[in-house]
Image (cartoon, rainbow, N blue to C red):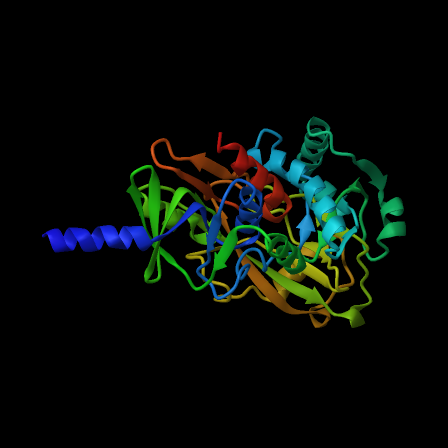
Length: 377
């Protein structure tokens, strides 16, 4: 018995110890690690073979304004704060980015066949006022001078919206941690979280690590990681699919073009997004899937995408678009589009869980890092 006790104590002595362990090396996890690195040593554990292989990679790279979000939501506040922080970060670290603005358009179909959609237009104006978001209501003719491929009656212009190279952004976050006391370990899936004295022991692969505070930023798998510490959350998974418009189609998109958000939908509607490398994406849709790895089953045919944008992009045909990619987002509710971020400190354990970090997670990432850092006091 004494021999076993001695071996257990010796194991604890050689266990690597950190001030903080961050679970998940997506943009949010890396932004948190970067912020915490000024407070102590940080270990980031990532289940994939390299950082940013899930939601951080498979998105459209948009830095949002927050106009689509309920002003009272935490994600709305963090999007507003994060947008400015991301802009400054991209300028400082030469991350490809461009302010392109967004048009949210009202079409004849909205007016004549879906009168209720006009309530959505009023809601957008109200949310912009409440959040002090700079907008301009423009006529269809004025919008066409900027977006000649688009047909609409009027729309809301949101000038502050940007696009960035999200992979370059993540790489810059990691590079900026290069001289700090931060380590990123990949291929390390967390399988256990156990309390010990005033900290937690995290098991990943065949290794165990100890920390004074653990931050669960595991993205799509954050609810599963939380359950390892007997904290009950549930994610509902939605796949967003993207097609790409072929250059031969002659379609231009100088900025983002959104429809009015469809009523009773869990998404913002299929829209146009230019990318920093010169492509034009069409999407995403919002498709309920059974789990966090279902990227391709029952793929939505291009005809449904065309039907969704025909009211403001009538010249597009199936020959003009090709499959691009899909991403999956975790929501905290299956009942409404408007599900908020959950960033919650455990009442008894030194553990912070981040649940339902979907769009605008990229926009909010640096602000999330600040928010988590503020929980240390």
